[in-house]
Each structure stands twice: as structure tokens, then as C-alpha cells.
Image (tube, rainbow over all chains, first blue to last red; front, side):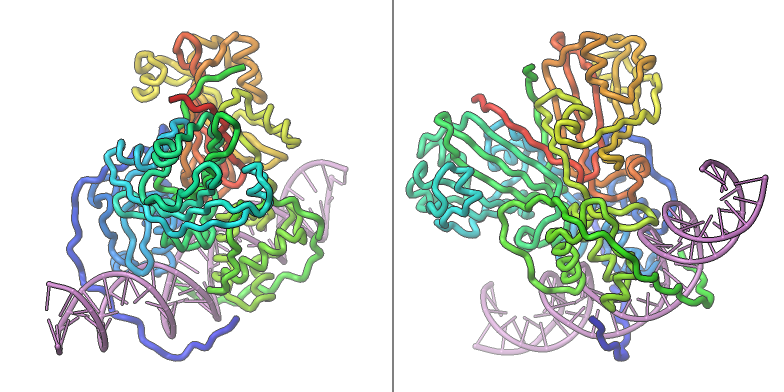
Length: 273
Length: 273
DNA sequence: CGCCCTTTTTGGTCTACACCAAAAGAGGCG
DNA sequence: CGCCTCTTTTGGTGTAGACCAAAAAGGGCG
């Protein structure tokens, strides 16, 4: 785990660039005391950038100066600059595109697991532009854990859809859906780059009467991180949905790995008992 | 942002220590391909430690070797070691106690926002030991945003409870609860180190008929991070609950900041329309 | 035993540098 | 104009070393 270190010069600085200064539409943090304590340097820098975003100097989607640019401006080491950027990334204020740069995050969409309206519907409702890519569609034998969920025999072939969904051109989630061909024969022949919900309801007449949703904050594992173009370990949200029909059969089993800054979950429900 | 750098020697290495090697009870990650690609060094180290935890060489709650110890063992620079540890932290496998060390995370508790059972109840149900500390109880005038939620006039005095809750002695969430004294007069006179739910139901006869829950992954802001003893920016989950009585009045408005590795949300619901 | 004080250990922060691979940009060419 | 190639820029990773403050451990003392 050691490596040689021959001589070499540092790269020159980026020339100054013109940057947009439009309005931002950032959401307010909930009722909480301000946090402007000036402890470590990286937090001070974080505050400075955050202020810039909140004050609208940097529009959603616009590019931040490069790390080396920040370095020249602030005099801090690159490690410190990056620490500040990671902080902002964890807060959902900014995100990065590998070897391209850091960008201001667009607002998150609200997701209501109670409504069985699909991604396409509720993203569009919020004035954003949803797209879906099907990465793969395979008929795979069910491993024991999956067979158990579908109440079928292990080894039964089930559809495995692998999809990536984007909002305004930015990949926000990668999902793996499992559907039983017994309920939706020939599913793979349809275009799955749209609403699966619509196909299952409209074409196969499958009505979902129960929805089971599991959520937990997680780090994006390698396969999800790669598909979303982020570094493995980036915080995310894992949403596992199981849709159940009137006869108790599982219509759809879905694992969604979301970018943590792209989603906000809202549940509104009656309490019984 | 510059600092002087006089001469000084490095500290000596930690002497080797005896470490426990009991069984661990880690949860399985959901159905996903393995991720054992050996790209960067820090990921290789991450895999090594993760394997140790999963194989049960390190029990939940036990202490990992110190960073400098890892350094000596692996020959990598401390920065690289830390990168691997951050990774595991983001995944919820380990956590740190400031200037004390890194520890293996205990399993997360499952939280069901549909049941209006309080923290004390469901944590106990899962065989864990819940505790609550009241950090402050104040009667504060409602700012406009809060007054709007309670459908009252801005400036109306409302109870502001600040509590910290722990599982098996480890602080997992800090919350801020707002209650209208009109519904629960003299609330502050009761011991709030237990179940608030029980007090509101048992003593004040308040029945909750609707629950509105908002969740979103977030970074822990300073006040929450301080209360939980973590670094600001650590990933967390913000859960905002609004409990509504039959007459439509808001019984309780609650903002909970959770450690991301301590919670797992489960919703099971009927779908209408 | 419990309390206080000192020393050691440990993570937290920071600097300075270096090399790499992917992305983006700049030209050249058909 | 589109396609290809070469160069520059940018983040990703890694090393080596240093200082700091909080936590933990140890020791002395009443």
C-alpha cells in the first residue's frame, strides 16, 4: 500500500471565469436556531458558500468555481476546501459530477408513498420533467428471499427490471423492480421507459389495495452509486415498496435507491386504534 | 486562513491492545449484487473492516482499533484510513464518539409512523432500552410559521420541549416538540422524561385522529449534532410529525433529528383511489 | 473509596504536494 | 457540419507530517 513519489510541478491555476448570478429557489430549513459559529475553517468556508446560494448569487444547477479556484481565493489547502464542499453535499445544497465540477442542487421533489401515483405523475405535478431509462429487463429465477415475498417457489422466473429515473435530466434514483410474469405476461414487450404503474393498471388490470413501504437512510452501494454517477458511500435513501393486489398477491416489489438530496417523503394518514 | 508550522515530532504508536471478538448481529443489506471491486485503497480497507464486522469478529458496540493503529497495520496514510472509516460511517456500520474512538453500530430500530405508539413503546417492543432526557421546557411566543400550524395568533405562548432520546444509552435523536397549552394546561408540571403520548392521552384525554409525517434525509445541523455528540454535517433523518385531534386542532408538532444509522421507517397502508 | 490533577491517547483539523483518469474543450479534417 | 484527436481542466486518491482539544487513563492524596 505504498507508492513512489517522484518530482513534479503543480498544475497552473484556472483563469477566472464568468459565473451566472441569478435567483435561487432554495427551501427553508425548518424552524431551528441559526448555526453561524465560526469554529473550524472548513465550516467558515461552508457558511460563506451556503450564504451565496441562499442569497441567490448562485442559481440552482449552476456550477461552482473549481476547487483549485477556491484554493487560490481563500488560501486554504485543497483538503480543507473539499471538506467544506463535502459538508454542503451532505446537506443537499450542492452535488458533484465526477471530474466535471460542483453544482448547486435543484429543489427536492415530494414523494407520497400513500398515493399509488407513479414517479412520472408526481414529478410532473411538481412542475419538473421526469424521464426513465430501462437499463435491463431480465427474466431471472427467484432466489429464496424473493420467492418468499412473492409466495412462489424458489427458482420461478420473475421479471427483473433495472431502471434509472431522472428529474430535469439529472439522475435521481436507480431502482430494481420485480414483477411476477404470472400477473403480467409479456410485460417485457411493452415500453418500460414510462409509467409501469400505468401499464400494470391499464393493460393488466391490476389494482393495488395495499402498499408496504420501507425506508431507511443509507449509503449508496456500488451498483447504485455507479448508475447515479456518484461516489460509493454518498448518502442516499433506500425505499422498498411492495404493492399487493386484492387477492393478496404481490404485484410489484421495488427497491429504489434515491439521491438523498432529491427526495422528501410525505405521509398523511388517519390513525386507527 | 494561514497558520505557522514550527517543528515538532510525531507521537508514538499505541501499544497493541486486547479486543473483544464476540458475535455481531448485523442486518443483511437488501438483495443487491456484491460490491467487492478493489478500486481505491480506502475501499479495500473498508471492505476488510466491513467483512470483519459481518463475520462477527467485532460485536455491536465494540471499539475498533485506533486510526494510528490501523495506520501502522496497513501502512496507509491516516487520511486514507479515515476515508475508509467515513465510508463505513455513512453506511451505518460504525459510528464515532468524539476523541474517543470508532465503534460498531448497534442495529437500527424500526419506526412505524402509522402507529401512534410513542418512542418508549416501540423501542421497548424491539427489546431495546429507551430513555429520554428533557433538555428544556419553555413557554415561547409562537413565530408566524408555527402559529399558522396551530391555527392561532402569532405570539401566542406555546410549550417548546427540547428532548434527547437514547437507545441502550446511545443518543439517537433530538427533538423539539411544540404543544398548545390550551389543549394541555400545566403540561410542564409533569415529568416529561417518559412518554409524552401517554400524558397527552391519559391525562388530557387527547385523541389523535390524523398524523402527518414528513421525512427527509438531511445533514445534522449544528444544534442537533451538538446534542447528539456528532460532527455537524453527519447524515441524519429529519422526521416532522403533526398530530391532529378530531376537532382539527394540532395536538403536537414535533421535529425529530435522528442519527441516520438508528432508524428504519416502515409504513404499511391501504390504498384508496 | 472518591476526588483532583497530570499524562497519554485519540480523533479533528490543516498544510503541501503529487499522480491519475475522466470530462471538457480546442482544433483539425474530411 | 460532424467526427476524431490532442490538450487542458477538474475532481479522485494518496502520502507525510504537524498541532490542537477533548477524552480516557493513571496516580497521588485526603
